[in-house]
Length: 610
Picture (cartoon, rainbow, N blue to C red):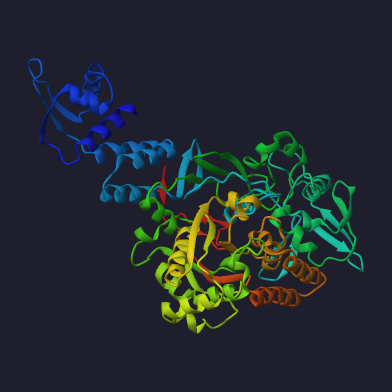
């Protein structure tokens, strides 16, 4: 590998020299380029010649120049080697090589076209068995998979593949259905719930799942020592009892109509107590559950799921799901991930026209990208008139038109169906906007805007910064990893936070979590008085039995925030997935992801083979 880097260094030093043209050079000059001795230079040149990369004609006599002819371009060396690294599973080395090689735009285009072809459905014959693999790429690792702490969209999706919940929510029928529990009942006032578990459900390590695992899971989340951000889901539980190995009882201090939603949440997925205790912190990276897939590999380069053959609801059709971690080292690979699709990973820039055998799935997310003000920090954002002025001058329509991508429509709520009218000032001149800002009490202070990496946030923050600067508002942008932004000492430094929220099928619970969770950005930004008002609304929501009444309570909270201009909605996002019609059973959930268990391959459409 070192010899390749030597060649790249030499080729970059003489980047203007085409292949086939001789140049005169001395061994001493080469020693300076390679930062080594003349003796080592001779060894390097010998290896170059043996590889057929150069022609070397040494000069005769002391001090006489030698002649060197480049036979191979950097691309001819780098691309095959990068491909070989990837085929051997060394993705990090391949991408690092590309990053350091300074390939031409055409060379990178060729490589990423090839890389795109490595993803999708693959069939491989091992001995007498045909193994079906769905292979995808992702821009980052997926290290935090403990259900008690999971909070990102991708992690939440993977938890659903690896774990099971006590009951599950059926969005189409808007009801809760049996899952690990095949039946449950409650007393008249809703303070005592009894659940009957299926027999013979196994964890991935072979032990049978019992009521003791369910109780241990819930007690772990509720325990302050665990520091799970979802402890509040179980704050009304006063006692949990295993009546038998397959029967448990949960007693509440008061009725809570959201209890079924809590128990169907992936945050309360059931874990094996013995494995969690044995693995400790390592459990988050390589967890064991009872779901349709078991996690067999999770490191800096690869995330691999394999079908759990004895899954209690039937084995998955796929044998294996591979997610290759390919960091976006440059703009070309950033575009690869910005436009890559979920199931087949056919990208928009290489998608065939017309679509032909490609199927498209589109839907608008329930949620929104937003700007939230830090009401616990001194600054102009404390002035209601200033917050209102920013709301009026930010043209969401212009933002969506200029940034495009998956930005779909101006948001007036987390609910996409809620309509509104863009303020007239948003479409007026910068001079009028500057006047409105100055009249609001702003005196030129620099606002610190924080956001987290990915999800288009960098572009969003840059757009807001530029647009507000045109209106006379000084903004400094800081981008940090999402784990950093959730830390209180980091959030305290922000005047504004730009973030996004998407809710799954249980969107009412998702919004309750957004307003209530300790790791919610907004919860840490708002004043104690505002949080108390929101908590009172949430307490009343938990007593509402109908979804319509619960939704009205959530709208009341949104209207409270609108009145105080504590949060500014920016836009909704449209999910867009493209997959080969050879794949069946594909549908998008509310998170824009596909349930791997349901996907299968139609043999009549030949796919890639290994």
